[in-house]
Length: 513
Picture 1 (cartoon, rainbow, N blue to C red):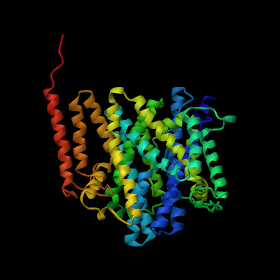
Picture 2: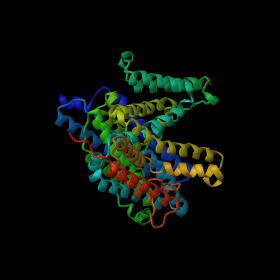
Picture 3: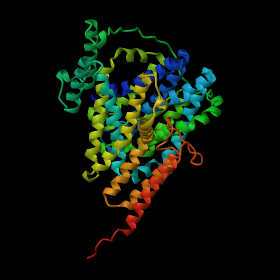
Picture 4: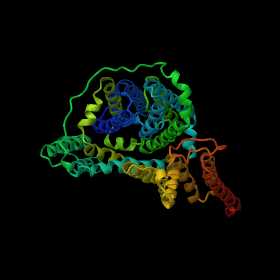
């Protein structure tokens, strides 16, 4: 009985909708970009690329469910929440615009493009498996302000803010769904008939959307139509199809590896976040599973990497156990195989779904402050700055694209601001972690420890892991930097680190007696 209660709970219904919709959106976004923007054959994308990517989610979520069951058995608790795993949104765009699209435009060979993308994902999986063994040491070495500050910044500014914009595309639908989600999940107000809050919010918003659409009351006079699902059967199996793509894939690794590294750092963050919430997973296990899931996706034809999501505290607040990850893995995996995912994504309005992501972002941000010592609040705050730069780059880039312009059309102060914002935002999650950790030690009057993290910043800046001046955020050799600014940034960090070391050396010894 204890095992059953550790695996399933009523809260898994809420948690399932949150995790499932997040994953489903990534698959549809990738399909839309590859077929609509770059013109890849729809059949290849829907029957090869997406099913393979979904297999990674299936394998990863089932393994995380098993880890949760094992932790519940070991601890004797029945409230262990499985770590959520899904498709990585930043690298979804990175792979589409940095690898798959450019490769297809250069070769006009859709099969070779798929092979290159497969090989890239498989190599990213191998990289993550290799570095997973260093994850526990990283978690022990970095102050909680660094680990949770970086994750809170991403949660509030990307996970919560960007979906908030969707509410204003249809305010009646969005605010109705938001109100139900917030009062039930944030305020823990029990809804009539004990209906799960996430389900109630989505259903209410969806019904309102189609009702208003039928009456012609949606903004812009939109009249939504429900399309029939296009079902099929596409079972992705491991294949050696990726081997011909390896030579070209090696050329894309400078762009791909930073995305893989970001999920590794994020995995360390979420392991710490889960520990704070009461579920102390072994960091190496969390990272190893995400590496294996990514590798499996690549071997099965997938083109999106898997990663642990940073919503564990929110899913725990919903009452999730392991049922939601099992259900998500099966729904996403089978949905890609049988082709019903696109139907559900088309059915649910964005304004009704967005409040789930907003809740997750707010819950994670709150946890970062609740679990961090009060003296380190300023370190958490400084972690937000690189993510703000990333957010501005995303939004301003969309504005330029809408005007038919690009960064190359900017001049003067506008160009200087854009370049500085790009440099600050590239590698943002690693930068946030290192800044938060360094400033936490500054606040503790331990400048020598802070100097270590600043020295790491200097080294990483010299090869583009952080502050890459390239618009793609790709790595480069420090012997041939793309801009002299690289050396300036590295020198700036080095000078600050040396200053802190000097302050540590000059620091008066504590009084005795």
